[in-house]
Image (cartoon, rainbow, N blue to C red; front, side, top):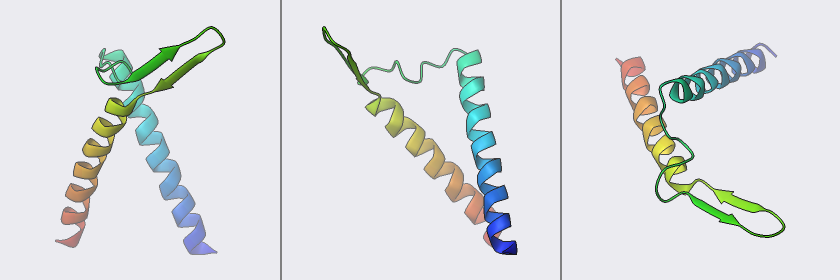
Length: 75
């Protein structure tokens, strides 16, 4: 049970950091969600929105950060 608690706390910290990063990106005017390549289709009955470019950018940034952290932990 102790390891489950640690994983839950780690997940909470990660969610907090991601939320803080999104909040700061909005404060500094970074256009996440409005980048060229993000798909937005408006119809009569609704809107379809798929932020593909923003998703790729966030994925690359998180991959780099995770690799840096893992290399620092192994030393």
